[in-house]
Image (tube, rainbow, N blue to C red):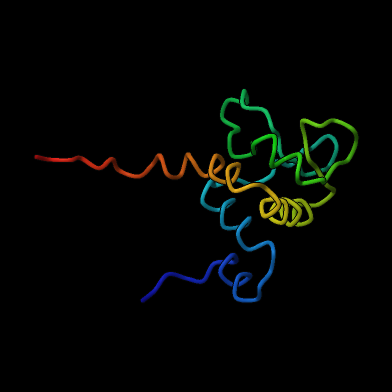
Length: 118
């Protein structure tokens, strides 16, 4: 039996621009943070959040998301999670191939090294 269908696969079958962005969010195991005080969902672009790396996306991706409540450029946020995730997924497609490669580097790094034998 095959693996269950993923949202990104379903979106890709429908030529939806969010497909690749959702695939990458899944690969990197990222999801936005619920801010209790402000009642908003947000991504951080900081890397010094111990234990909170699942809520951090790179600055260029966060900046491309264009989802902002307020003027702080270190956060992208919206009033609900789906709106933020959709904006983030669409923004991924707008990034250059080089930036996309840098974002996916942690995934490629997890691949077992190839050992050359004589």
